[in-house]
Length: 491
Image 1: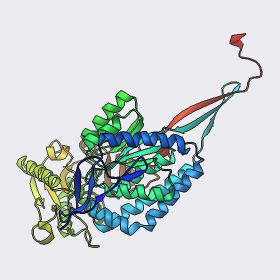
Image 2: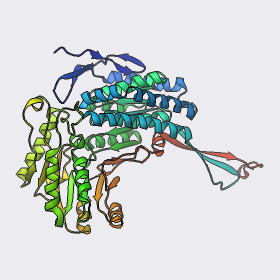
Image 3: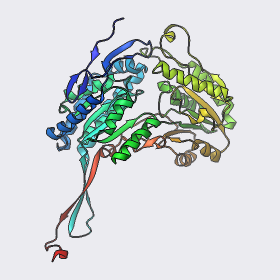
Image 4: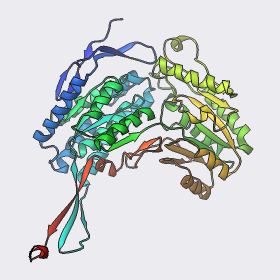
């Protein structure tokens, strides 16, 4: 099979190859090359950021009326919808997610641009209460050049979630996609060009995060960084940002607890727990990877859960019926296998999965069966370390006090799920659990209108919602003197 043609990068308004080494991205279901490109280099980073700064000053994007910026974002949303099937198929090849899921991600990206366009056009400044002979106002201004660093697990949705509010706020953006999934970021740049975004305001710089992401974060013209990825990298970015006195938003790891109470609707809970951990092959920061089940129903619930996990359709991402596709790379699958083996070494019992499926397509791609483990406690490595794969640990609890203590005993605090018919109890638990998002009798649903983020090692700051635009702006106070006499001090 011949190698694919080299793709151009978008650098300071120009489409050209990067200056780095050639590398290929692969389809996780077969291991075959999908695209080839030259990675960006630190020199390309400098060119992109300096070009973005010039374009931002010259284009008037930051001083454009909100409805003028909104019109461009509305056009981007329309173009994503126009090309929805092509983008969904490309996303499938880029990271191996089932086609039904990539279609949903593309629709989410279009909805994000549409929402941020509307929010931009209707964003209001504030006249604050006067405390003297003056009029006071609070306004917001764009920052200039901002950076977005996105992960490989949901590229187009993650990129839209950062790109749309940053552009709505009037900034230029340097977008650094994950090294192994650059294709949708490049497509978004092409659609932004077509929609009329001024040239140079958006650059896309694929390459190693330790090189390109670091160079972007350190650049003196970059005024803000929005990052989604691993906690260790997030800490590194935060340290650089502290030295620069630069704001950041960091959406990092998770080890999210899902809690099934004894009065839960078991049909709903089984379906929700399976979806929460095994959709996206578990490669999700919000995956419900710690399952707390009331001891009285543990045996029945786990039996039904294992049966459901064994029925999940693991296979070709192009097949409409597939529920779980492959993992992103062979190296990532090996990492998950090490986590599972360590859990078994620690005394865990394997209830299902824990191996690579055999035969046919499975021999070529990076597949791994949905895996459920029990017999460990909440202080075990499997309970405390993020696996980022289709691995669920079952843990019993005795009462609400025990449940909350265990659920909150983690360095992570990104998300949680509660399954119960008792809404009063659900309210108390939802307020007691420490997490940025809590789902009650559902899981892994999102709205662009609702802020999202984590606590502790799960990150800093929030994205989404109307306030999401303000994260990419600086607040300014204006005082208008109304006094008819000169200031008395100078008399």
